[in-house]
Length: 445
Image (cartoon, rainbow, N blue to C red; front, side):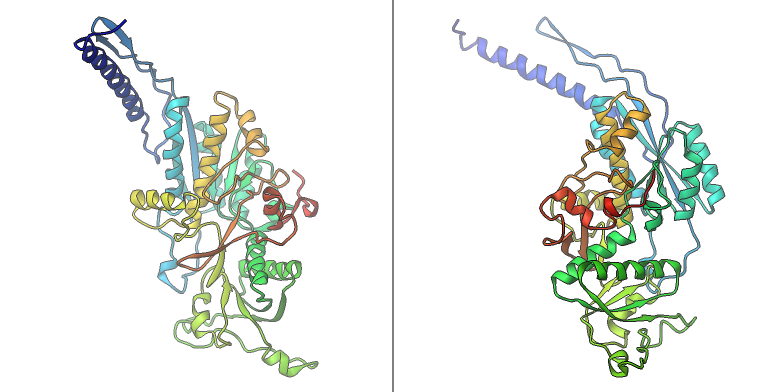
């Protein structure tokens, strides 16, 4: 039937008004989901009453919000006694890691308002492994099944052993120890942070692709430095590089900020004294995880003018503030707006951990912990945290598969794994050229 011109405006007004009422209801739901990310989870709020509106005699009922199910996530941070780094800019901010988890909580709740899941983050800081166990008990008593752990390997193992048989899944975002993925692996620990083998392999692949294959290795004397140096030796053997000389830096208390020459002189050798004293190398690899002497290496090193890589200079890392591809610019901008600083690798790792929980709970809404836990361990979990491909956890050791950025302090210069190495034909398997592949693994979960 043909409508008169006078009837048309009235029908249009009704449609517009109805849309506005529905939009208002949606906005009400959106505003109602907020929860402080650093506060304990509260009980699920009661469903809101469905608002009603009458439009020209038509009664409209806006759909009510779903009953919200709390999903509390714990963040356990161990604050160790660490040596003072060479530069104060290497001191982590107080909210390092925590800020990344909070950003993920915001994203989880953006989707959770529609599925009925309400995420929260509770942070507990400790100074010892015993205190960490006490904090874990409190998390467990208050219904926390998912715990982000920012702690040493020893503390993580204590927490894992305590949690055995309980509905608890831990996310390691700090400890790079290879043993945690091998002889000391645990089924209740997922490793977001790469281990030292992954980081060394990622760097080695890039250096070999660039044909910088002769390396001078300079390492400190801490257990971490020695472990990273071992990872560099392994990577050199895997990908065709040669370590032409190795030297150990020994800190002289009070002198490292003023003295020149942090590279010790080469050792004399009876076979070829000239080569041993001054070998030809393409790049200097530094193993200095605490940043005690490495930052001086490019300028006060005392060696040949060569590129510096490893823990200083060109590094393998999970995140760089200069990373801009695959949505990373939006990630950086959002983080900087909320937290007024640049995002750090530890923030990114905490973000991935919390987003893992959000994705798994969303895909298994209303399911018990065991179902969510199995989903995280399985092949159906697919995350895309700004690295260009879908990512998941390795089923044999719980390590997060992810590309590794090769970056300076300002910009990323490449992304490993590099093309041309084993498994390069399949993106998922290509990730397993970094670190310990399944045939090599000794993990027995």
